[in-house]
Length: 453
Image: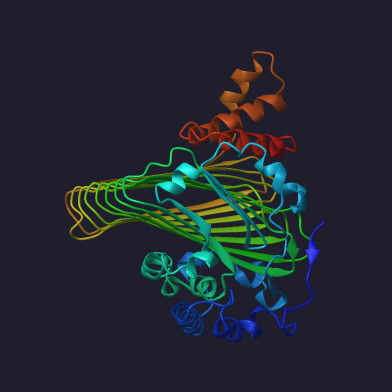
């Protein structure tokens, strides 16, 4: 069962009351002075930035007054779980059963890194996979951490919640693939949330040097929690010239959780930064995803898949920024909705004035499985160049009766036929995924949800 906490470690204060003190003292403790100053800057931005309301276009369909109660939450504490699988929650081990074929494993419990392992051959090539807290205290890593952590990608200035995460993140994951190093197997990260009634903050900084290759698979999950809980995650991906980064996040949190992931990828000349986001859990899930094509020949494929049921509310806010000419981006988000669930998709392709010969696409498709479910989809284009190829499309529809009739005419019961239609609808995204264990996990979770349709 979920573990509840009654107050902040020091005084029992909630998130809002404790914010300035926690930022001033340094959330991770014992940090270098430059990091403490960075937290204080984030706190200043947080204080100056109003809380988003439905009057803002980006939050029009998600009422934070209704969905998120920061005043009721306490700050999550540093976990004291040992670096020993026998001490980890059973859910962590279950999630990792298919994850052993990897270049590295990282386990976080309640925002704290409790385990890291890395292939020795990769370590010998200079690959770094570590706790972000440890990296900040490693002078050999300071140059890169100082240059990229919350300075270029998910900066405090991007939003109220970006500033909050920058001020309060407890720990996170740091990955550095040096120039020319190909990490063929994925880095697998398991993030487990066990403490209910708390706000948990963590980050990831993924840095790929010139022509390097990295695949990073992040899975965040929990049981159903007894009290309202907030899980905030910020992901920064830096793909230098010619690098190839693939980032995957599988969100399988339990009910009573508000999950917020802020992700930003920066792709330089001839680099590719691809993302796959799967939303299956939590009561409310919000994704802010931005891809920046900063160099000629850069690219980003942005895939999303979601299945909501009950009263789940999924909000996807995406943007594709073509800053440099001759770049490519392609976004495909598909979701199925049952019961009284709701999905929101808001996407924009921005082509900047000098980004000629940009090639950008954006598609969102929703399948409604009940009369009470709903989807709002708002694709947009903002084009400031005249030699481009850009398009966007969106659909919201019911189960295809013709497809159902065709399948049932082959002697397949209606319930099974409906499941086949749904899996076929979502399969367009799954067919683009070739990562071991990921498709199998997603398929099992979707089939589990479909069993209740």
